[in-house]
Amino acid sequence: MWNNLYYQLTDTWAITRRNLLRYIRLPQLVFFSAIQPVIFLTLFNFVFGGALGREGAALHGKYINYLLPGIMVQVTLFGGLQTGVGLARDLKSGLVDRWRSLPMSRAAVLAGRTLADMLRNVVVVTIMLLVGHLYGFRFYNGFFHSIEMVAILLLFGFAFSWIAAFLGLATRDEETAQLAGFAFVFPLVFASAVFVPTVSMPGWLQHFANNQPITFAASAARELALGLPSHGAIWKILLWSIGILVIFVPLSINRYKRATS
Amino acid sequence: MAELAFEVNNVAKYFDKVKAVDGVTLKAEKGKIFGLLGPNGAGKTTLVNMLATLSEPTKGSLKVLGVDVVKQPDKVRKMIGLAGQFAAVDEYLTGEENLYMVGRLYHLSASEAKKRSKDILDKLKLSDAAKRQARTYSGGMRRRLDLGACLVGQPQILFLDEPTTGLDPRTRLDLWKIIRDLVKGGTSILLTTQYLEEADELADHIAVIDRGKLIAEGTSQQLKAKLGGDVIEFELASSANKDKALEAVSKLGQKKPTYNEDNQTVTLAVGSGGSKKLAEVVRALDSADVSPHSLSLHEPSLDDVFLSLTGTKASAVATEDGGGRKRGKNRVE
Image (cartoon, rainbow over all chains, first blue to last red; front, side, top):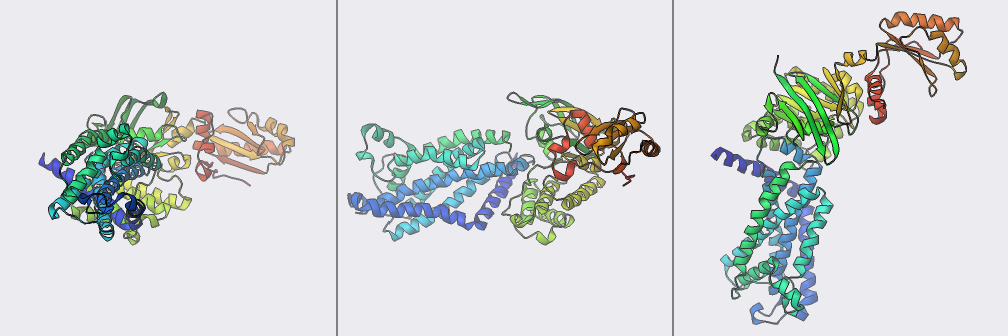
């Protein structure tokens, strides 16, 4: 049993390592996955900043303090969605067939992919924090809560990776996997408190926006970064992340076991 | 009876309503090359995937070295190596890294995985490219690396699904040599191909499948014998004297001679003792005052076998050189 667990870990590491090597050899990929959110951050900060900012003492007078934690949710989710693209590519190229013919763990290919994508998210999050700092973003709640914020976002992105894994295996095509991911993440990101508070939305949308996980994630990130009074968003997003994992880890692994190119 | 490399017992695989494999039974001896021959879409890959534990049969059972593939897939995976239709290597990893990763996934220690990667790269003449990313490799190098990846686990049986499709003739010959060497080392091999020539050259035993069904089985010699032995062919200068020519040789063959308008060629199946018949044909044509452009005697190629078994010309499906007819030894120009 311990042997089995040991091989689960070494298998997962072998796959993670392979995915990370790819990212190192393809630095453009990591660069461009960071550039898009930086453009988002820049545009939103300077386009909407004037109209929306300076509204609360809680934000220390700067829209960037509202925007950055929100946009980091978007970034980690988009990063998570790449999992589906990578898996669909491996499926097409026949690599998944090879792995499935090896006496290795049935979970390792998915775990290795989602872990590598989480580590890539660490790089992207770091770039976002640096650019955010330039634009005036500051943590106001101490070092440990800042780490906690990043950890919660990475966990949420990791959970989303497993949804993306399922989409990638189900669609078997990189572009379709990407489109399928964006199709449900885009509306969720915009109909949330990621970019703007929900109060100005029509009633029905406000109700939806206030009760969906992406708003919880953005609120949790803001509570932790800025030290805002807690409304339980942290617990809600933890539960959502765990819930997604409980459903999609077995679902994706089951899909993987039957996947052929 | 000696233990079998693999056996397929009345196996069927349906995808929705498509019968990809429809009741196939095969038995392969250990330490030999078993050739699975068929055109595109015949069901070759589906069979290989089932043997390699990638998919389960709708009906029937499969065993690899006596182990049931559906009941004990993990045990089977420890004994097999699969090289699928695509060269499944990571193009951004070096040759060495590709093999090392597979070695670790076979649960070799890090040092053992390194050592075996190096040995295999040497054996496949890839050591010079070991530290280069696979995307810089040529098509043939990729195939060799792919083959190398399935050797890392030192499998007792290899499944090679169309290993030479898309390779140039020279690279194909290189790969054939590697495959022959592996068999000499005691490995059993299942090789699928749509190239008749390849099955003829490599396989000890050939199964021909078409549209999911087994249509013929045996050694290359046995399959050729089904056509009734040697064939004499001669090409006429023009179609004008075709009737004269057909009349002249009509009694010499086992069956009536056939005439192909396209290349003005008369084909005559003569059974055994072809060279004696050749002289008779020459004499008959001479006295009928017909002088052929060219005249040849050859054993029937697998192409002929395939044609007579399926009614479709395999070379029309198989591409360029692979389906080409092997010219006979006694060709007279």
